[in-house]
Length: 368
Ligand code: THG
Image 1 (cartoon, protein in one colour):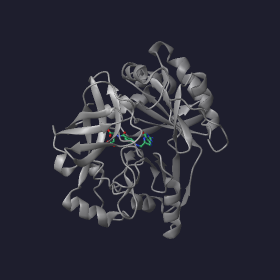
Image 2 (spheres, protein in one colour):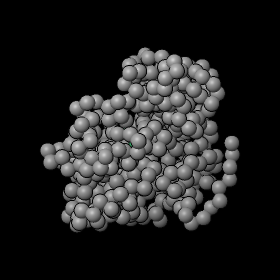
Image 3 (cartoon, protein in one colour):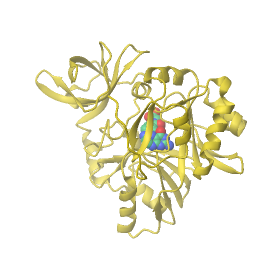
Image 4 (tube, protein in one colour):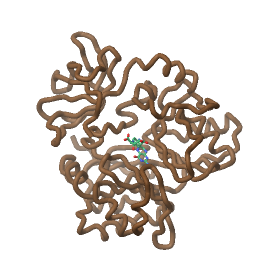
């Protein structure tokens, strides 16, 4: 089903919009009130290419929220159950963010510059207002704002080779979820080894949008013999890898434990996290339901536009929230939320898809 989009100032451009359009983007989704590409050739072609070569992704929609001031670290720790006390100044942490009732508001990557300066690289929800409100309400000495920073991801097995040509051999020394500041023309960017795929790669946090197209063009010019292509987060690949999508796989109905984010729910000694009380209770009792990988054998299913009920006989025991045909695993790979009574590995359920009922097999582990 194809639709047109009416453009206006509200639907903000990114520093790379010109490049994305020139490369022939075929479809978009909306994310943080901006356009995020979803297809360049076909989802399947893009998937195979991502696993073999290298892609450049405009992920400017991962907007940054800067916390800047003496209380920046206190505010950051108030937001998340993950213990930030030992985090180094060159680290990035995947952090669940909850409200005061311990419910998920976002699942961003937090980038620590120093004890007084952080970036929060957000998923699709209006986190700026929550953070600003907390800072004001708690009378904290910290500025909270959206800086002119747009991430450009370089993903795929050849991404290290490509980035070496732009930034030098030092990129090879960047460890997983760490960053270095690398020179480009007359400026420098924070370059982290991270990204929304399991194929390896980097994210370049482009400060000052004027450098967007020069960097985009430099990457495509340097990567011709590496078969560099434009890309975007790939539905099939991210489901195989179990990368969650806020708004799809979880939302404000869910807790971090339900999302399987247990290892990021170890609050520090002070228990400063605003959702600590509920989380402490849930940590003791265990969650009532959990995110699981789900295999749906048979012919290829169209992507889910609403949650598909998971049934055990007449009883609803969960839902499938993302699904795609996997060429490599020859099944529909899916992500769902399943009640404790039915989340054991190998449990067979029925999923009610728009294309009729199908067998659904619960899996403890994702494919990749
Ligand atoms: N990069 C940056 N910002 C982002 C995303 C990103 N903001 C929005 C969205 N993606 C946030 N969601 C995720 C989800 C998963 C991961 C990162 C951001 C991720 N997870 C790894 C995993 O699950 O294997 C590693 C987690 C870890 O061990 O710390 O990478 O992609 N800048």
